[in-house]
Image 1 (cartoon, helix red, strand yellow):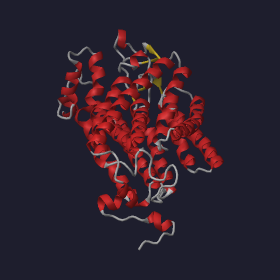
Image 2 (image 1 turned 90 degrees about the horizontal axis):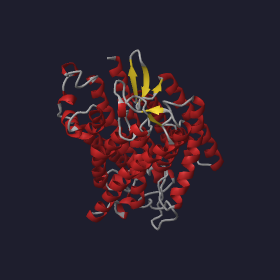
Image 3 (image 1 turned 120 degrees about the horizontal axis):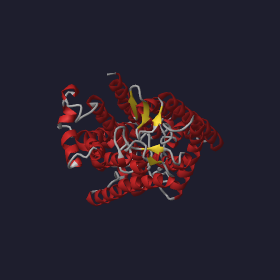
Length: 441
């Protein structure tokens, strides 16, 4: 019961990431787009979670069915773990522990994956606020939650996943969350184009105008609070045997928490310096997140000093990524710089820092699935990055092309100028005009 409660806290804490992203975006959009921003984000998150609830979690269970030698492992996993299956819908005490070991915890993990997909969709939405049509966003969210994000989880997040068993190491979901969402965001922002006035004076006179920078700080605090609980949800806690990361690398709750705070606080410190030097207050708020993402693959196997190093590098990697993306003519100042850049850099750097560390496998299994049979290496970390980007980037590009042909990805210029709250919901929010002293007739 205690373990189920601990994992439940981890699963529910992922929702705080969705809330945090909502506050960050609320602070960074024009006041006349605040309502639509919240409505789109929550709807996209719900749709992605719904997809994972239906079938997505079964894809992650596929790796266990393969390792245990169950005939037709994918088909059986789908039959057992779709939302109408016996494993997901039967009281745990009524399930055969030989067929479904730790059934209660595995059912809680279903919720964990649901909230994980919700956070992924919310993160993707953050990259295209104030300009994407709702219908394409919702279709993409369903595909992400139903198939793609769980598929990346199957490939490289778990002790028996195909790439983990060759040496790919993850902990906090850097591959299925940060790198996946960051890649999708890069493709989507490229296809949509920048917001009006983002790269120079627009003929309409509008430009991206943050409604309240203070709300960005509130959002960061929500995410900061959620991360330790999410990390605990990414562990295997075996009574009398210890704590292990999701890849079954030996760890400890205390060390994980210390590592998280070491990376976040160091990232915050460096981010504050960058913000002061560049006179850009957003780096003060986003520095801790860059530090956390950079260390997301390290926290279960690293030391506090190593986590501080990763945390310090995070804001610099994020800044470099932001400059690179902007130089490419893509307006995406949050998700790609904070999730994709530090996610990739941290994942590959772990391969060098922890080269040769045993990973993968499961207790009681032998041969190709024996505990700790694989070894972390930079080459396999790079392969994990490339595979994740392909699984995300190719479908994102295809879906963009489909929607561009079917009616467009982007809202009309008139809607963008007027404001989406008024256009979509008939609600006028002109606080950005009032803040600038503009008088409307």
